[in-house]
Image (tube, rainbow, N blue to C red; front, side, top):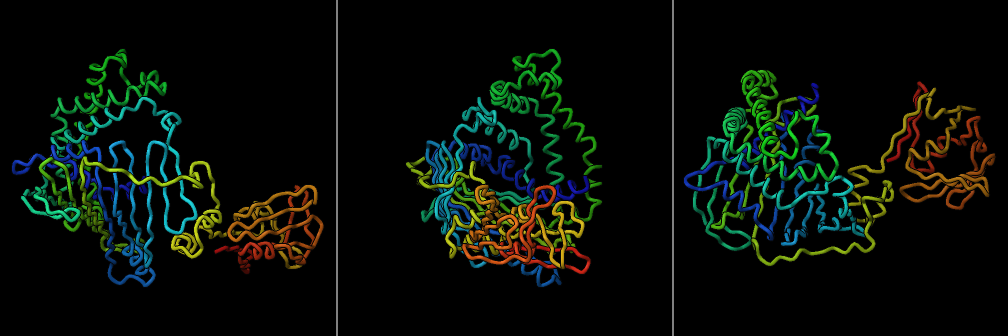
Length: 503
């Protein structure tokens, strides 16, 4: 529970972002709700988005921590061109920046699946999505009803959430994709200090908005009932407390759900101030929900009530601590939209030779071999993310590896250690041989029972002792030889513990 509370603190600034984006009421005659709803009606468009992160280090941090901060600050995502086609197909091309790397990528989504490619990949990656609504018991989903629910939710939030302390509207001339447009600029700011009061006002308004609340629940009912019925879950809903009210009686069900939800909101309001006060007793919360946590939003809306440009900056103040050597972290998002509801054709990516990510279980080595060795992604996966790194700890009386020490040499079950280092192990019954294939580099080792000779990529090498089988049928070999052949190192400590490490 303590961990959950600690994690929830970091969600508070994100809650502020959601509330601001969806909850500005009419300002100086400008209908914010209409602008947000107008965006939901966009069927086709082209757009670009950039996302960057800036971490501000705490005073006096170590050089190692500063290196981590530098890595965070090197990250940015530039999605230069997104195409939304009126049939729902989407394509995008962009560049991921990390350290000194610039990694171009592209993806395409249609009703059949998602195709993704990145510079240096030998083939595309594919994730089929056709038919997954049935597998996930999502039959009955209606896109039109989903859109209506989105509109109901947006209107409900906008209607009930009060405006933040700083909000303004002005007419501006702004460049969007190289074209100067006359737009309405909506500027809003909120600090962490304002969030609790905004949320309380929102809850009070929700409690009193019977009509809007019921309309929202009614929309959810229309959207979800076919899904639950198709999944055969409608019979189980009798346990939700509807009593003798049949699920088909929409009006009665909506009334019961509204009354239950309103009771929950009213109950929360009764203890809200005490809960907030208790929350602020945690000094970390006081920092996060303080004046230095701030959200700035600029939305640029055209005469058709479509958002054509937005700049969002979220700065989160962070409490001082050894485990988090940061003073603050901020996220900057900028986007532009053009060719709204115009003729747009998404750029497809061929699936020929693609790796099916839903069925393929790639080992670290197979993943690396999907990319050119000199590519940025290969180096990122192997060196920065360390996807091939493995560490094995073997105790003197280990009940998993059951090491045997003879003459100063440690012997271990070949299969256990090899497979834990991602190698494949196969039994060649005809030759009574064990074939081990190293995962990353593809080296092949062929051991034979009772033989002190092993073939390493076709070359015979002598073992310290012939391969032997214990009473449980496990073949044993020298740990140091096996680990070294699989590109790992072995370190033996004075207390008998052994560390096997593969970079």
